Amino acid sequence: QTEIENAAEDEIVAAIHRIHTGVRRTFSKSRAQQRRYFIGTNIEANEDDLTTIAATILQLLETDTLKGVGPTQITRLTNALQAWKNAHNARGGQSITTAQDRKNGLAILAVVGDLRRDIQFAADGIWPYTNPANIPARRAFHLPEHRPFVVAPSG
Image 1 (cartoon, rainbow, N blue to C red):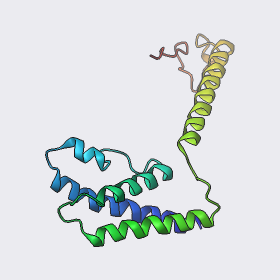
Image 2 (image 1 turned 180 degrees about the vertical axis):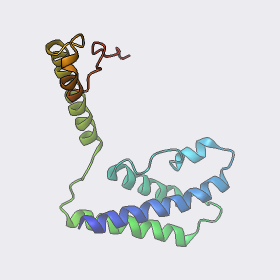
Image 3 (image 1 turned 60 degrees about the vertical axis):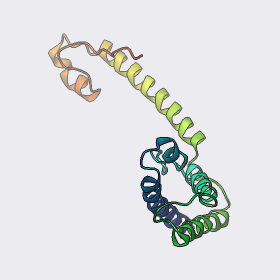
Image 4 (image 1 turned 180 degrees about the horizontal axis):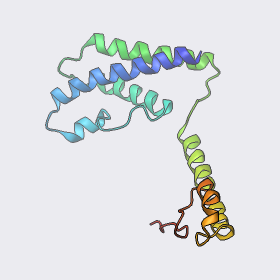
């Protein structure tokens, strides 16, 4: 089911990009109007945002008229969104990646980075740069060969 869902997501993105052309033509001088249609937004960030964006654009198209965007483009987006919903529900309706998943992943990555630096500092103490015989061990831990390991402070 994921392949069908992915294909539907690709079709949603393609349909939105086609509609974005009409938005740019119609509101060429209005950034505010372009933002209403999510121009400048990473619409492919995650599936939850993509489907919300698609549904919002369809709502806007109920009242807005865009140059070069007619029933064909609206139907294309509507069908792609419905195909995605069908595949998503067939899979059990669970999101593959959500903003919370990404946030959790980034938090884990930060912990791993901290632990990696801690190991490197420990290795720097065990195999000091002042002893040339320690160069192979320092290389294994990605430490500088001829100076101490340092980390630039962040923020």
